[in-house]
Each structure stands twice: as structure tokens, then as C-alpha cells.
Length: 158
Image 1 (tube, rainbow, N blue to C red):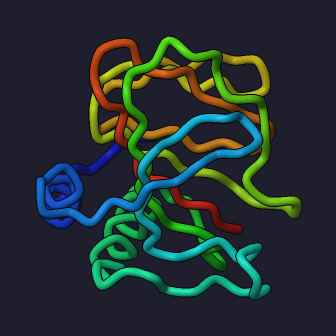
Image 2 (tube, rainbow, N blue to C red; image 1 turned 45 degrees about the horizontal axis):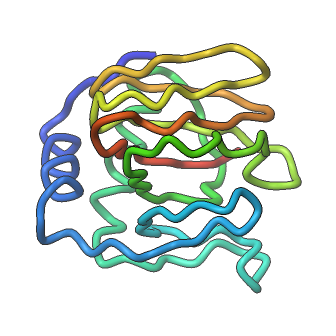
């Protein structure tokens, strides 16, 4: 997949990486690590069985994901989740392998930084570069970056 680097994408990237973007402290109890997240659409498992728009910046995020997917001729029926995750450097053990939802879905990661922190999908390693994309299904996890903050946009959809 190729990132078309649209003006909307560059605006969203600038916003997410700015000092004014609202990040929220998150605790991953399964893996025992902390990170910062921002939900544009909260995952449907959060009490309701439907995704809920949670961010004033949803429209821009939606536009960016649609531009990327349409450019790559990937069809979308429904988004389940859209978010931004920021993981700080750590020497902790890596998170455990998981799936984002217990129902069929695709994952799209958009790497906003080139801080490292490979993504491993079904045993295959992907070492991201800034502005690169990863579309996948299946079990996955990420490694922690060693020196700088790893920031990704995440969308799950059918």
C-alpha cells in the first residue's frame, strides 16, 4: 500500500504530532504497560455494540483514512475504530499477540514517526518508516521503540 500524502493527511499528522493534541493516559492491563491514546471512534466493545465518535477531529481523520483506502482501491463497509496511539521508548518485554476485535475485521496502521517499534503480524515482522502503511488481518503485536516515541494512526474496519 502507498500513502498518497494528501494535504488532509499532512494536516492530521501535524495536528497529532503537535503539542496541542489531546492525549489520554491508557493502561494496557493485559500486557502491563502504559501508553497515550486518542479515540476518534471508540471501539464497539466499550459498552455499546456500535462505534461512537469521540473526537472533535473525527471528520479530518475519517477523510484521511478514506483517501488512503480509496487511493489503494480498498473498499470499506464500516469502520469499527479509529485512533492514535503513542508509545514511549521502553526496555520492557513486548506486548502479547492479540486481535483488536473478536469478529472479522481488517487493521490499517499509519506510522506518523520512524521511531522503530516493529509490528509483528502472524509471525512476520514489519519495520515501519515514517508515513508508511500496513494493512493486515490476524494476530499481531508491536515492539517498543528504543529511543523515540512511536506514534501511529489505527483504523479497524470491514
